[in-house]
Length: 441
Image: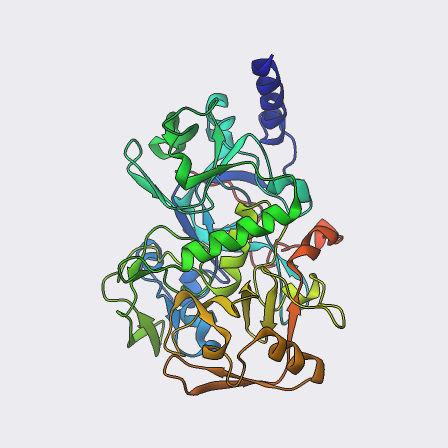
């Protein structure tokens, strides 16, 4: 009986993945990401860097720019999309394609409109129309911010830790989703994985300790798993850390925590300062920014959280009520940053903090090392109620910046929020682009 149920659901997956041509926007071509991590940019890199070799330029994207205002020119990375994610291609320019990503959005600070489309290199994906049916049904239905239930499926296996696969020769990021290939075994969970650049399907087994199948029914249990997962990521292993990456939303391996420096480099027609890690000069930079880490962890654990930057989060999640105390998993937000309440009882906070303050890593710290004069969450709440500013501390204990206002947002409210916006508002095709893309390899 179980087999009939499994294949009955598989038929539904086939329909949703376009085997029966359902779901894609009119005129859009759908594609699947075939690299472990694909950088998604705000603007084409051919424009931002005036790059001739665009493929090489993508490999040279830095961890982070030094000056925030340089991000559009120097490091236009806004997000990272993972292997097996289905996207919609709505335009192209040279070697770069403009794609809609279904599992997140951000509200543009300039236009005030939601956005979920970005630029990436065409080598990062392959059109679904080019794949055989047996390949297409091996791709999981993507998470979609219009459907809260899409974050949790018993047919999907999601990585909670990086996983290196000998068959494909790839190491996959946390958050990578695979379609189940049968019942679990003592060795792990069998899954389907695309191979040969998406032209074939291989069956592999993922160990139980690096993945999760579906998610708990109880919402509070999902939040507890989310906090536990984040704390595990923040734990240093033999001095190795998850690095801060501007726009980052992936974790493939750890870097030497102390080894970063500031360098000057030419981008386009000007010289700018960037942060680099000498051990990893070229290649896609795996790591998190503050909002990307929360997004990735929340979706792994079945929380319907879809917000890609710190400007968007407070427009959707609910603030603490008067007299209410924060709970583990809640989010502290101020201009340009978000962090997680990781342990109320022990007064700990967890974040991915940038390089300017001397950190550049995912870490968990006592409140007293983050905000000057704040030892407990009761003191933090008191500042919030009185509207008093905070002083953010750098790694060396000096004051890095003054925070005029902040808020604390309830992660539990994610289930109470629906994205009730017309799909037409999201990421319209830029006027300078031609008709929807038809790419070839």
